[in-house]
Length: 233
Image 1 (cartoon, rainbow, N blue to C red):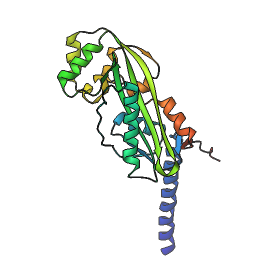
Image 2 (image 1 turned 180 degrees about the vertical axis):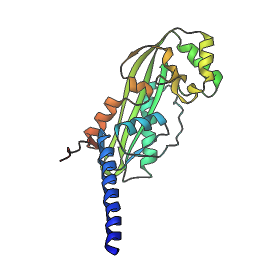
Image 3 (image 1 turned 60 degrees about the horizontal axis):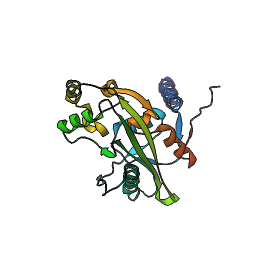
Image 4 (image 1 turned 30 degrees about the vertical axis):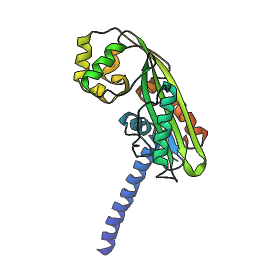
């Protein structure tokens, strides 16, 4: 009887381990990139977080709290790069053993920086300014590792053209609430896609992170590598 009991529990243990191994294998197979060190995303953006998740890049999140106000006569490119750098360092100082990535995205029209609208009225005003016109979407992104002598800051620009749309259409879009946490007051990956007529350059940059350039930076420092699992025997 004791032998039978041990066999029963042993079988369950073997099955459990086998299922666990299947889950681990499945998890690895779903990853495109594997991280070679502890990585922190210094951003509360759900879109940047999802980009990393979709690529299999394991990370933790530590949102950076900094003053996001442009300096007097500061150029948009300088501003967005400074924001990315300051966000990264604000977290890296607290976690010196970690790699820290940060990013900041802005919309620029006539050299005016359009950040996240503070109210529905401001969102509507932004959208009507953008209607039927071309604007630029800029993202600055930074990689910092305090103990590894790494402090990189880069930026990407995408040109976006909006179709002409009515004030009523803009009001209906603002009423969805989607514009409120997005630079320029729209989300190209969501309902705001109907506003966009043309995109010249990186699409993911408009969403919030230029993936090609961002991944190139991580690979340059050996932080991520292609996640290739061995075929089953």
